[in-house]
Length: 333
Image (cartoon, rainbow, N blue to C red; front, side):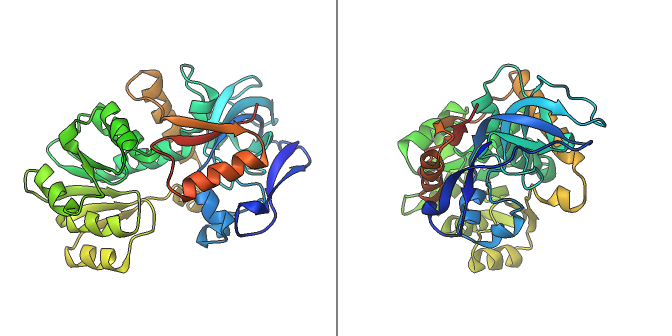
């Protein structure tokens, strides 16, 4: 099969197209023909050789995809050849999703919602699982107020839709461009709920938008300086959800001084506890909301088909924060 292989850490020139052996499913695995793969920031962080490289089990990157089951192992139940599926494969598949095929334990996959495309489905697993974990762990109530950094991205947009579908409407988020602002407005926020993080009085505007009060809950999806602002606008003993692990030393100091509850959001964590069923169960919850029309998949940008050029372009878009509120996807099938 064709696959895009990473042959060394560093810049995007380390990707190459290769012909590698087709994976063969074991007794407890399914073989999936990949129709589309989505890109995640962790992909370029792995490519750069940063902390995330420790999660690599294959030189073929890519941690989520959609496709069609083409073969099942003798002990597999619940899936048949021809089933359309999606998976947050992480590092648990035979290889990453920048390839034509993958074998994986079916406990990591879910049936694709019938009302969306393969390209849309590929953009769901990682962002959907992250947003769902944020929602279930924060235990927010309708009267509480929440601030979400980078809400126009895949995780943020999913989370906003999930919150609104559960009666949570006191939401403030950020945008740094007109396209990002329009993406947030399309999610159902109004003008007063979207604050431009490039404004010099950004922190004061956030508090003013929240009727002069600090927030009960903050979800930090961006990292860096904006994580400090997120900590500043969170109330004493508030709840801070860290999705990026990119907060600064000052961020950590502010949260400690305020006695805040800090929740680290990691899709990798359930696998450390050997709770692989978490992935299918959570994906099924998100898929049910999509199929019922209560939420929609994130906006996508199909960068291209399976090629080195597509992978390079997608990585540069992520690195330079040029996604403009759309999830980058590669068409494979």
